[in-house]
Image 1 (cartoon, rainbow, N blue to C red):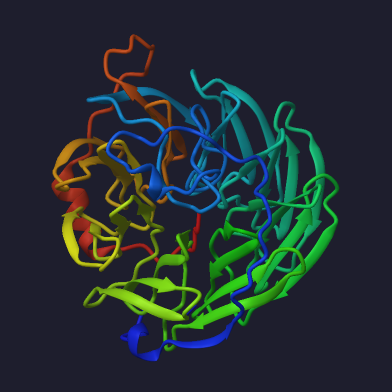
Image 2: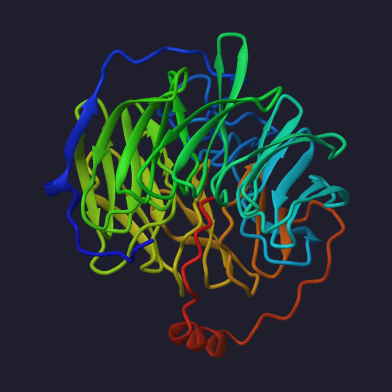
Length: 435
């Protein structure tokens, strides 16, 4: 994929095709939960909110809104760690009292969400950087070995696997088509696939002009996603045909996942912009510019705010309606992982090796934890707990301070100045973990 350039999507946008009469299909396994404190329930359409005690797919819900059902405690502490042995860039999901994630040891891992105790491990043939989807007792996840797997969530046994022609870095989403549950996932072979969730039968494959990195959002029978062809695609999930597309132009490759709410898609791209696109009109509503750096992070969307990370080392917060800046918070390295809004707070990790909690209203730091290795994984927030992976091979669970849980002693922090000086001159090569 090409490097970020100076393309201006507002000037270059053009509509390729729009069909306004969208299919209206019910979503599978609809989630229902009260909105977190400080978040207007209207910000999250009914049926797509993250359920209490579950974060079953990347970003928590089928619209990829990044909103937790519970608020964070006033203070967090390390509850437990799980050692996968290799880097964890996959973003964890939580369902049925278990946490699921992939790792660079070629495995899909399952651990007890309360204690971190191992439950099972399923081996693939290559790195597992994609986030899982848990649906109806099955874990759906792609691997760099080009296969898409369906694994029994209870036992870790393979139910089926389906081939693609290249690695899979993005997560799957799901939709109900008639009586059939359908899972939808993208691949580096330039295609978006739909599989029967029960049997693994390939229902269709929609071809783009370049890699598909991210997780597709699902809304009313549509899959909404971007690709390295610099196009926002909208696909009818019943037949796998394009119903709309918005071309961003230039080097505006879309490396992350787009959130989709109220007819608008929110996402960043390699053209050094984060944009809001009205899909029906085929228009960029607003664009938020970075002078020199791209945006890989997927956003968290509240009723009036959009929060997202940047390769400029900042977490950014803007007005949802206008894109007007509200605040930004500087870390020591790029922020490719995606933030989660939980009540009146936002939690995220940075390539500087730290986890942060900020106030949603003002961006003021409330808490941080020094892991010491880059955090490319995006957190899952369930019942006030934060689950996230890191490049040190550990999955971390943070819970309310003083909860009385056993936890390992915290390691001495690394020499901040030495590490940060090295980070200034040793930025790692891009890694497409689109989460």
